[in-house]
Length: 262
Image (cartoon, rainbow, N blue to C red; front, side):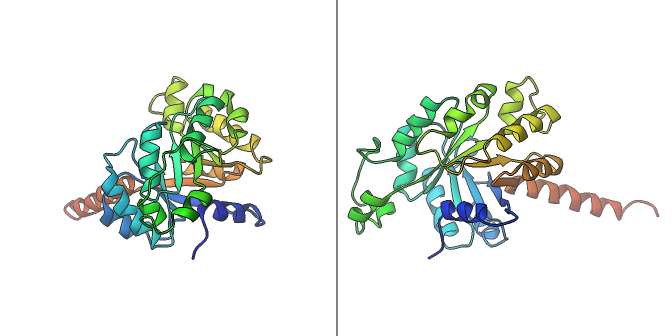
């Protein structure tokens, strides 16, 4: 049995020099694309349920694919909502990202939704996929411990970063430069130097916090260099649709070049 994503990141921190875990963002909502990328060398893949039209059944199919591959499956929920979180947990999602967490109180709400009583308020059910359809109810109820990633996407969240990261049950904070740039008055400029600098300083400030990992979505190679240099534990370096569009445009340009007069 392979290690968990939690163990994967913890192992990295014990390695010198510390490597960065590189992932790909899944926006296409295509199990075929997920399967094609699952053995491409990425450490993890994010199944996005916030800004992609991914339904629960599709997500379940994609989880099965990734669980049988070397690539760890992560899932971003649409909102910090206990009903949405419960549905993802029940189908077996173990690494959950919650968007737009702006305070320790909101982080604590996510923690509550992810855990069974007495630690949290997650609703319990028999026969769910996560417990092998009820075969492992006893051990699952006792041992379920999802990996929680909360997203830092506003200046308010950056100001509250220490308190958010210190919230018991938060395993990682993940910076979203697109929304953060918009909040900074730089809509559509996620790689702006001010955005990259703010995120880089925030990542660096958390390096001594052993209990909380740091992640970020990189908007370009220069930003990626900066984020790796500041010590980010896991970074999304591209998306499935982004790769498709770039490859399509490059291939078409090359084809059209053949028709130009020599």
